[in-house]
Image (tube, rainbow, N blue to C red; front, side):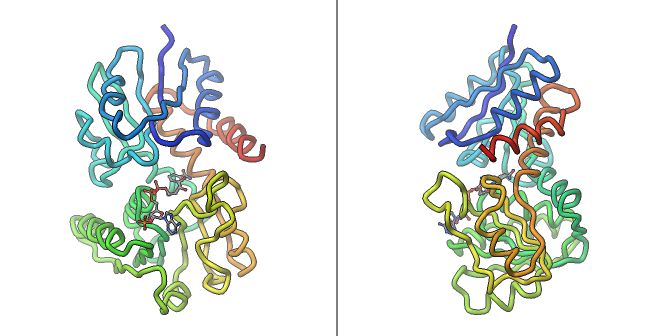
Length: 288
Ligand code: NAP
């Protein structure tokens, strides 16, 4: 019987996960169909319940449901529970287990593709949504000394900072975690001392009304920093162009997307993911 893995989010039109996940299943000769299930918020609990069917191996969860699915699952993996967000669900005999592969994907890309060592460094996050939560958590786990969270809605940044301070406190660590509103005058100075700047907003994302927008102009970007844009389409985003002009090193979001997808693949199938092939398909999809 053909098994199903679904992608649950809204909207889903521009997601490239179905392309590289299906290619990976086919490459490994697995009889699995990856299906995009565009889901209105009101249908979420019904759709999640459907994952309990024996023909379904699990799902990926994306914007805007990474936090909303938590109470609908039977169990959370320890990491997903600590982060407070789920992007992968596994159906284990009718019980739904939630995982988070975003944090590990984020870190693997930063280390391997960005050649960045986090320990003792100062990092800034632009945004305070689901991606920023996974990134902030991963950076603390990897030993950053300071985290600056900049967000349009200040309260959301404060909520994230409080959650991250809780995580750090339980580990007996006390990195500096501070919050700044986007328009703050001291932004340039605060950013100038950061070794890493991560865009966790959708600004610059292709096919969106914000596709031409960079979250920061080059005058605010330090030439000594690594600028990591989680937006993966286009590969060279407006922020990365500004960063290049400022003389900074850059890293796009495609590697994180593929690495988090590879971890999810391994959770559903128990087999090693064909990462090079997934990269190839993902890269081709964003270049079309
Ligand atoms: P989210 O939970 O909806 O959070 C979006 C964040 O962006 C919020 O902090 C929001 O600020 C901010 N934002 C949205 N529009 C803005 C605007 N016009 N001006 C300034 N700030 C704005 O989304 P998410 O799940 O964190 O995803 C964020 C981005 O990361 C998306 O582009 C997604 O594709 C990307 N992502 C990439 C990967 C990868 O593997 N490469 C993985 C996950 C996510 P407010 O709080 O003020 O609304």
